[in-house]
Length: 398
Image (cartoon, rainbow, N blue to C red):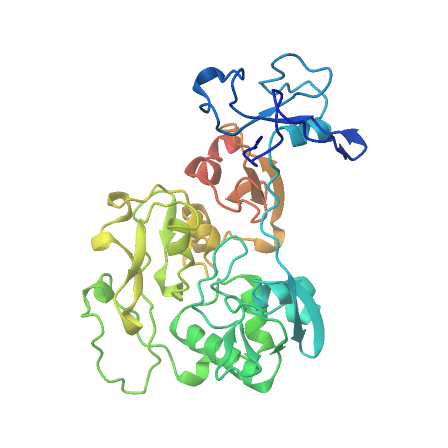
């Protein structure tokens, strides 16, 4: 009996011949199944006699061996050549589920998050769901809880960035309960951290939801350098109610590339994930402490040059509040020479190596002030190395 391995088109040899099929009007490569019967040669230490083997017969006109190295000058391969190379991976097939977004039924692939459904099928107002710890090029962190929505049958509000869609799910995005929760989250964050340099979207959301952090009272005096690191984790004195507790502290400037202004940190964990499994796999920073004293820190709170940091700056690229920024931006802001209204962004390709990373050059008054990368770029997915993000000074040395 003749058998095949089932892992692709069969090849020439003794035994029965598989039928020819046409794909897109072109004949597919012929496939012939063979076995190890007597008289069948098994070169190169192949399967022993009696074992099934699949061989590929090249398309008509090809040489005895066929093309083994891609020719950049050759025309694009046709359907026969593409299919002859082996199975084509199409990815998982997902069924569609029906979800109601504020009364409007939409269809989305199974496994999509509610936030993805809002971005893909929702109205402009629904797609504008506020987010702080979410990014399109990162796994959901589910920390800030500002993207919550109301799901029918759920006891509590659900974070839309992490809640998966289910068939028949009823989602409400603009109820009083949802708006109140979002406003409280933004107010508490703004009362404890400096949000004045947060992104334009964050500033707009705070205005749209009527955020008023001043109602918690004036901010408490900032901590001195190293005070928060020396506190006993999880032990707090009772507040006197006169001031709003906050994370204000001196800026950490210990290298030539970027600064850490933790007075603006809201503990969204995006920098930790970018340094870890979402991008760099360096694991130079992590969360330390507990409760209100939780903070982002290096191992043993060493200075950044003594840590595992490789200065890729991917933590800067995902920070939503300005807690992490380049030294160039920090110095310009301190000198009053920061002009975001005049900023232009030009996309180009990094010239340091052949990977082909896309760069977005942020230019103010003829000077490059920052470099980012598009989150939807197939090469970088928004992340860069030290050369791509910080190696632009030579462009301005003229």
